[in-house]
Length: 173
Image 1 (tube, rainbow, N blue to C red):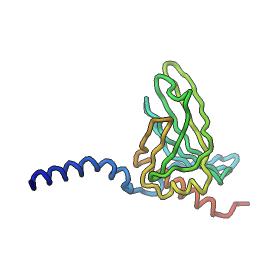
Image 2 (tube, rainbow, N blue to C red; image 1 turned 180 degrees about the vertical axis):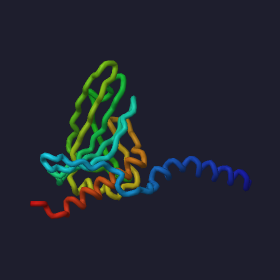
Image 3 (tube, one colour; image 1 turned 90 degrees about the vertical axis):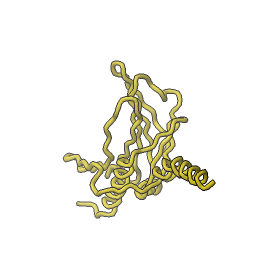
Image 4 (spheres, helix red, strand yellow; image 1 turned 90 degrees about the horizontal axis):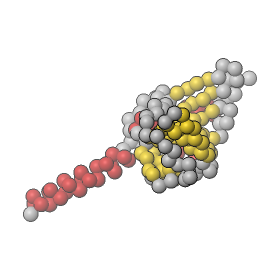
């Protein structure tokens, strides 16, 4: 009987491990996001890094100093066919809670045998700040759910932290 109980406990812990891992707080180092500055206008862009892979839908978070009250969330897809031309609902979840965003905008570009799709939505700063303490980020496009990798979670936290510091800094005259 003890062996059965032990085996059952071991099996249950193994089944719940992926869910537990998804909520673990990734260890992040500062400076993981990208900072770019337009030399002409002085506009600063703080964004996550992206390395698009074929047949994936990768997240991107962008803050700009010329629109400091919001952050843009984008998902970029690269596949052999357009998957979301007729359904482009977008939901962003931070630690299991939905983040309020604007209505998503959909764009598609065809090049050769590939279709590149973009879904973008704006997030008001008050909502975007939730990303600064995120442990897990998921996003849904229509009925397809994606889990952001820990690297993106760390970069998103860095974007929000860096943007918050720039928002508090006095404007240069």
